[in-house]
Amino acid sequence: MDVDVPSLFRLLGDEARLRMLRLLDAERLNVSELTGILGIAQSGVSRHLGLLKEAGLLVEDREGGFSYYRIAPSVREGQNGFGPLWPLLHAQFESAAHTTVGRADNARLAEVRRLRQENFDAHGGPDTNERQLVPGRSWAAWSRALGHLLPRVRVADLGCGEGYLTLEASRWASTVIAVDRSKSVLDRARALAARRKVSNVVWKKGDLEKLPLEDASVDVALLSQALHHADDPAAALNEAVRILVPGGRLLLLDLREHEEKWVHERLGDRWAGFSDDKLKELLAVAGLDEIRLNVGARRTGDPFTVLIASGVKPIDAGNHAKRKQR
Image (cartoon, rainbow, N blue to C red; front, side, top):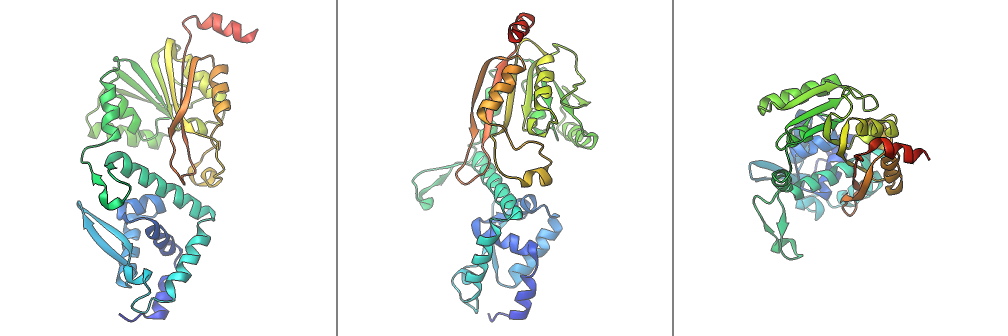
């Protein structure tokens, strides 16, 4: 196939297509994965993929009900008139990796890889050709299995978003009270719960710093990737402790302090994560005992590390507060 150079240059003049090619140089991806990374409508992603495939830049593999796209071998090997193209593209990819958009794409690609690893793991030798896929090995399934060991407690999911963790907790909790400040997000969460026929969730609109719950009304308070969105993290943790019964537990997942400034604009993060010491300090000042903190997830090349922290509200919360003031 001879390359139509003017048409190819026009095709590569689109930023979205260049982003797509850079991602597909790093990983074979399907339409849904590319849609999530790029933030472009699925119809647009499919159209771009069709044009790139038609130009001979991509090939499509069908596997497990999905179509996966990757850079065509002829492009990498400089065949069919693509000889000068690949070094130019690769240089552009390396340059783009250090931009705000490129760093954001890399972080979302890392999340796609993490989800793949957690939902369909592999084991075997270090050579990929020796690795054996294991159907059914799923961290989601193990988290649900561990729920069988827990008592039927009252749970508050604070900053619940679209309710995915809420619905997981509803499998083992007696009741889950899900709180978020966005009405539209709560509406989507309610609709998801209705589709899954979940009936033990109460949805409430409210801010983390002023929760619409009574004192000592829940046994467990969950804050999953919510604290870095709070206007005042200390106030949010004080509220979470307020609604816990004496002896109740707070469980928190959040990001370790990082330097990815793009998350402020693109994801609305108020805080660039928290250092280990700062998170422990916030939990202690909020009045928790038995504070524990460890790394929940960290992958080589991923700019984000997930921290897991927990603490227990003292049985004698009043005396504990007085001791803190001394």
